[in-house]
Length: 284
Picture 1 (cartoon, rainbow, N blue to C red):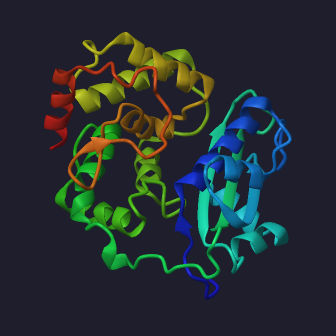
Picture 2 (picture 1 turned 135 degrees about the vertical axis):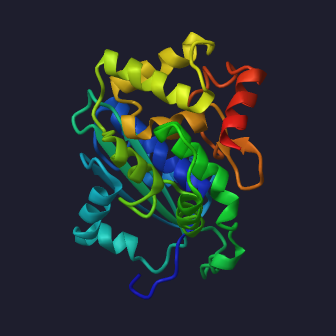
């Protein structure tokens, strides 16, 4: 875009950005300076990112990635950060708290690492995994949302989309796999009442595991409470389950969760070996 090279995703900047969004949402404030007095540079350093250039965008109240990017790009200062030619790396964090002033809180952290004077090239597309290596991941989302695996045509289409977006189910913005499937079901972003949340959680776990009655009730209760409180949104339920329970298909053929993922720690080890085998059999 605008003749600029792509920024490289950085997990440490993601950790810094997500931590600040979570802090703003949890403590109901909106500022680049944390309640502990730390700046964005302080937070990036604390996350283990040693930098010689550091920038930050924040936003609040936008309910979708499309909306927040539009807001930033229509603000001269925020747009200048996005198009800055000095920084090399990017991390974006999001948090939601239904009881806060704005609900949705977004943070972008940009940086160039200490000792770097010229941004190294981002690996070309031909270094990425193949579309086929994402087929199990596509099937996991189709199974969780629709109760069936994808057709051959759907696998080819969405495997290519994931390949071109580094495996993200939320990109391209507003048109990713998760947005598409949730749109088919009419799943939105508002907190759910308890009865609807219970029904939705039961539906998704039956889709994924073939049954929900033998699951540890703490797993089901965890997601019911999350949907009611708004900490997990209906449209993001399948994504949260796959990552929280470390059953997300990976391109190397294993299952796991993203580096640095902290959600669902209280329930992560509650699935039995038989339940995991049942899920994999339905998926593969």
